[in-house]
Amino acid sequence: MKVDKFTPELAAALAQAVTGQPLAATATTVPELAAELADLGWDASRLAALRAECMASRRPWPFPVALERRRQLGFARFDALLAQLRVELGLAGTLAQARTADRALTADELRLIAEKPPHWG
Image 1 (tube, rainbow, N blue to C red):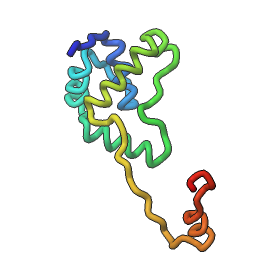
Image 2 (spheres, rainbow, N blue to C red):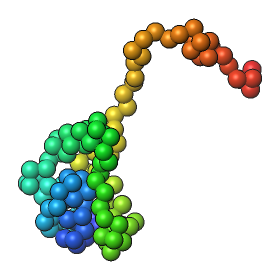
Image 3 (cartoon, helix red, strand yellow):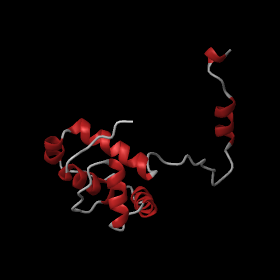
Image 4 (cartoon, rainbow, N blue to C red):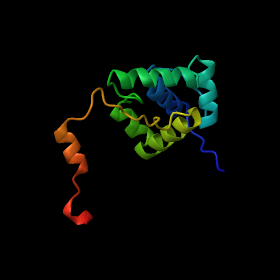
């Protein structure tokens, strides 16, 4: 697999996206950046907790990086590397959680569930 090298400026922007903090990252590959973040106290478990906190309080995660900064770095490259970093950190999605009802379904809700559209036969 080809390893995509990048600049310290791009590493710093990626670090800011996942931590929300301005960090002077100097890594030149995604695996190096993940290791550097861990060395700076931002290991995968801390980042997972931060992501959960943001999601619970309805704040964005990854954190927004300034439009002009992303323009200078290259939108597509930044987004692709951010996706790779999230995979490297084990934060590439959320776990599906089934929701349970706080109450029993009403008669109307049960009727709607039982109904089938005409095209279902």
